[in-house]
Length: 230
Image (cartoon, rainbow, N blue to C red; front, top):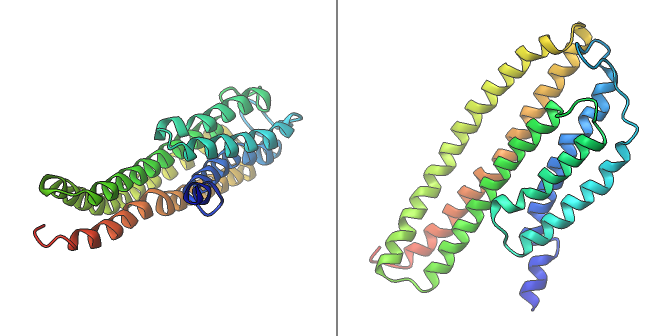
């Protein structure tokens, strides 16, 4: 009972992943509410005011609470992304009806969901490996040994992949900014948001899936040393 309660409270895994998804929702929906009214030279929508932006607060709470409950029940990584997808879709319809779908909302939601689902999958995978070690036999030890090698390789591979994707995305978004607005001052604002978005994605990638893969390797490798025949 004590372990279950400790896992549910803010020191455990469920609130951590729930907070990550809630932050993702806020970053997908709040910056457009700030930036869009300032873009006077948008080629299609011009400056927009969002009178229904009060929906953002309740929907952020929805993402936090529902994701928390799903993580507590160890839901599938793809299922954990559903509250974020549902909330951003509702926000796009209720808050940003002029631009449906809103590019920033869709882009951030897709990337955030992918990074976070990878993070959760790594977490579940090494927790399963740790459980397997508690009742280890020869064949299961070999399996866990392969997982340790996989997680170590995955950590370095994710770093390289994230860097390549973020640089490519940043270049593409900067090039696209010139076709979205015509005024240089508006283009400057869009470039600033694009750069900030890539920085936020980089932080999510490092402190999420990359750190989780490195953590799994650090936890599993010492346990394997206890078995001299491995």
